[in-house]
Length: 576
Image 1 (cartoon, one colour):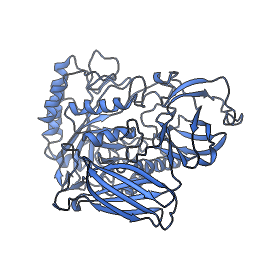
Image 2 (cartoon, rainbow, N blue to C red):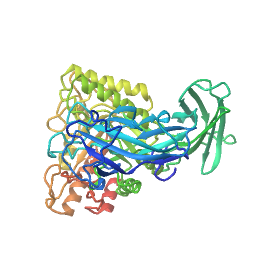
Image 3 (cartoon, rainbow, N blue to C red):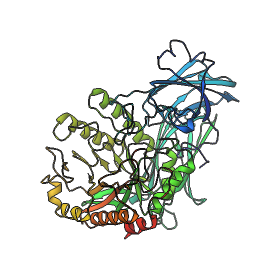
Image 4 (tube, rainbow, N blue to C red):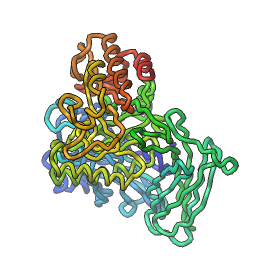
């Protein structure tokens, strides 16, 4: 992949990074549209460094107060106009309107998914102008994740994120081009299924060539006729001379196949590069299996915050560093918590073999608007990240956030059921978790959150599986595993949050009593981790968390990524 390329599974050569210094304005009176700032941006502006939001240090502004409407403007150059120009926004929080040379180009609602606009009809050869209006709110109906809705941070909710917070980029494509490429591994039959969507119906002469290779050696190739805007075909990746020879993807051996796609219609050619991993994730007899072998998941909670840039990674190198820190501590996966991370993070997890649970940022209220916003945005997220082999679980809800009465409320229960089945309709290949950690309705995995400090208490509490799974006792003193009216169906059981240990000397909070020193930290970590690992029906765990985040100081690392304890000892305990 080209360094910095924002969309690693559909890589083209001709693209322009539009990050950097933009003109910027607060619009607290919401007057910009009436004053037609999209046609004539005010001369007196601030400067902001995109993609960092105005709340962050790296933006150059560092104002953490809430401003509901913000505007951006910058110039860009187009050297030729016979190609189509696609403008991509990886993430704008929350509602975005976009103008090019004063003309309205499109809009999008939702902070966490990419959106793209064909701006060909609005550009001229030479210098052009992009204007963006972003509107956010403190509404609990919109998917917020860990963004606060009060004036001050509280609990585990942090400074809000407003406006452009991921990469902005421009891509040049021919008149006929591939919009999306969805890849599904058929592990048992050594085939990869391609589902490619074109921007329009092609002419009869259109052909698509697919070449698959590994380590520079071609392993398979085919050519198909493109008769409609949807092209569906599969390719066998087993070696023709040794038909059983397929290279699987796993955390121990994260081998990837490279793909080159060439679309030709006699008038132009669209070329894109991609990759895939041959792996299978499924559930059978109370176990989670990867490539038909039981998988014990050693996960760690990852919120993806940085001190100077908050939700936005300061660089691609910072993403790689976080993955390496997780692997160094003996974990084989992350539960990416309440955030849809930069897609380059998923690329490096694919490359390095780190499993990922992809989790929807929560709403915090339940009404029609919240249901509609959640559903539409979740669809975008699942579709966008579908083809990454590292993603092994979709997590739709967390701890009843946004569905706080799910234990007894039929409407909230049906909402979670609906999201479960909707997700399965989009992706039948991965497990789906509904209401991670607390009362479940339908869910492929039964996940529990328990911040018990003592290993002996952990062991006693989980000694008899039926006590937990049949709601005979609250598993963490106050919560039950299943919502009322729902029964445990033999799903795998996983402790998806525990730990959260903090030191007495730290300003902020952790879970339970804070420890006095490193020895006390390691002893408590050892006791509770080994207690979980000794539960025979438990198929994994997730420790809270990788790094400190603002006022929450329960990371193995500080927010500056310095180790707070001996990471080699953590690794030994995890792998023992």
